[in-house]
Image (tube, rainbow, N blue to C red; front, side, top):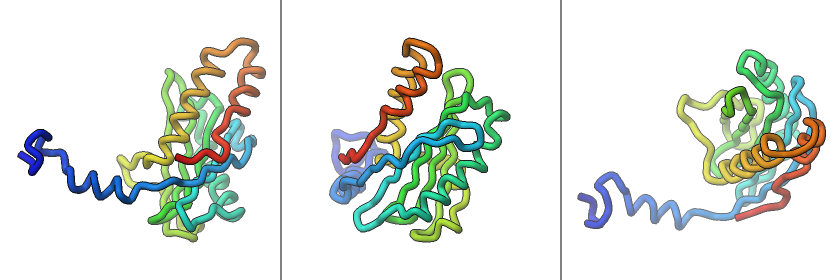
Length: 172
């Protein structure tokens, strides 16, 4: 058993408490909606304290998204995507999330050293969004379901509503 008798053995209470002590707010900014590789893409910047997503970082994130989304048809893409350019505390990240057939999604995560967008490469197998990235993706999951899947009107109206429903300036 762990040192906390009421917790399962695999629960690392010490590590969880250390993680909670280091948890902090991150700035989120909406960067806009654009068409990339035939996809309608909503882009966000996510910034750790003391870090900024620069215009160059944003350009590189969209370039990476363009390459990834160009393969969208072979992945069953429905043509809607979200890109997150994340200036993290331990490096830089770009997430490209798109909706695909069968109520599924496709996620690619690119990682690299801080301030070197030219060195971003695909992340390791199994890498998943961090808590801050997941907040944006959770919002985007909800607005996709609300406005596109459960929305009313023609597809153009649904996509307009979807593209306008963003996290802007949110922090937690």
